[in-house]
Image (cartoon, rainbow, N blue to C red):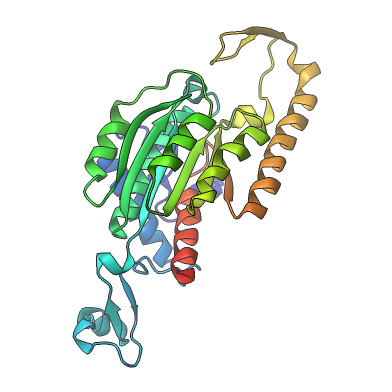
Length: 306
């Protein structure tokens, strides 16, 4: 009897597997497929407490205007919920997307840039359904594209993602500091990058956004082979950003490499957490529902706090 993988055993999982999504050539269709499949699965999951309507309704409280009660929701749930208009419930949501040359790498899964593109499109679509204002910044060592948050910018974000190509070297400080200076209204900012910089440089770059009052999330995207060093042949390995070639004997380097990567990841996690910056590590073989649930959990928590 064939054994199904954990990914394949979940309802609708084939629609959120990045290798399957890579066959869809329209980002708007991909985003809608991912989000609707995720929401459908969420209703059948143990996470019912995180309602996908949380940004649009709140429970009726004594003293609320009864004219704002959503009677359709009452008919389905037998509970009173108040409609929240965009001005009451929406917020700014911007994705800061690393498009440096190293993001083009992909060995074990799809290229990191495509995984990041799928993530961004899906989260932008999801945020739009929650009536958030959506923005996008693409960067390498400087800002390449800047789309300020707006409720009308989903199509522009998807178009920008569709035409972007990785290039240039990665350096977080300059583009993120520019974003911090240009962002007058506080909101949620999601950084998606392979974080090919020392942890101190990453912290220095993102902290400026925190000083401006933004809620920060960091999605660290790596290919599985970059974590486990799944290489066997002795060869010259080329740095995709600098072009430098280094002769490597994988059998001799593997354990030390894994230790260094593990230390890098753990330092980022332990340093970002106390600064109230949410950190999530993803490899490009992971289904996108991991990222969607991480985003929705934080969005729900921040809405409760506010």
